[in-house]
Length: 390
Image 1 (cartoon, rainbow, N blue to C red):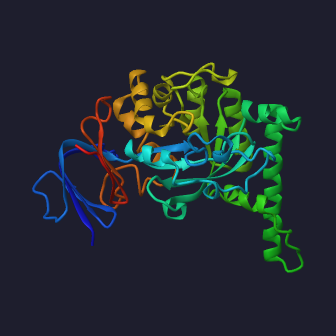
Image 2 (image 1 turned 90 degrees about the vertical axis):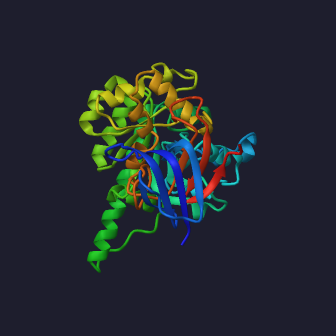
Image 3 (image 1 turned 120 degrees about the vertical axis):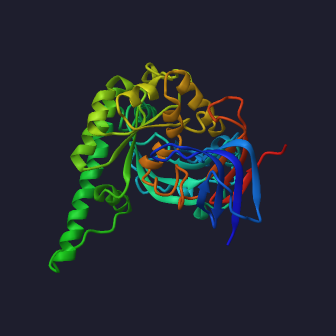
């Protein structure tokens, strides 16, 4: 049994009570075994936290980490298969390079889990994976795959395929392509079920694209919709209601303008990135206040930097900007811990500190919401993956 004791720390549990414990935490075989404020248990391996702050590992539930490799250009660009607007069968785990240096930079900044998504060129882009940031082989890093299917609405698919002289070049065609593929998948499923229950019925020919959409129709995976404008957000919700999908709005630049309506439908928003310019018309309502406005309306909100749009090593900075713009400090930490874990459906494993959870931990020199605080150590699955040299 591998045991590590982290002593002399203030623990931000980020659980339902969001308690602070001044004391110690014990890790056993990759899991959080116990924590407390009294006398710590005996342990051969002890890390003195030196009065630092211990939090869960940070989570960004929308990235392209490892799909767009730093400084490589076309050779390192594997996020958009823009030769076909409908590609639900693509799996990001076949394109991620875990040796890419941004993984290490993210880890050293305290980011221990990310959702890696295809890009937004295609109306249907492919299958998203939730992975840990420590490892050399992607198969060993996967926490949940597929996590969701990526859809994109609005300006990106329009502009990509307009340049090719192909559909879709309008928002109508983008929605129609998505709807058409989901209708085909629904009929494909119905034919499969009829064939299973009736020997006289012929099963449909195998179709990998349609097979890849079946978990969506079963409700086993979510639908992540890239959508900036409010009208695109509501197109995502309209399609989701038609087909019984579980939608998550990615970016949601105008989501704060319709936050009350999103709260009524119980739709989560992965908000960001903020630290960018208004490089296209869809971003005209870009504001760092969006997470605060969404949370005040009761919308579950996570924060993203959309790596590599903004490097993952700056996720803490994005959180600080949201706080400066009005987001409650506790809500800000939840936006990169418990909220993305809940949105991803893995809050029973990551996102908070309590016995039985994965030991994904970040030791900070001080308050993680103080820009002067540094990451002293990072644990992933209980393994000490990073230690800052004194």
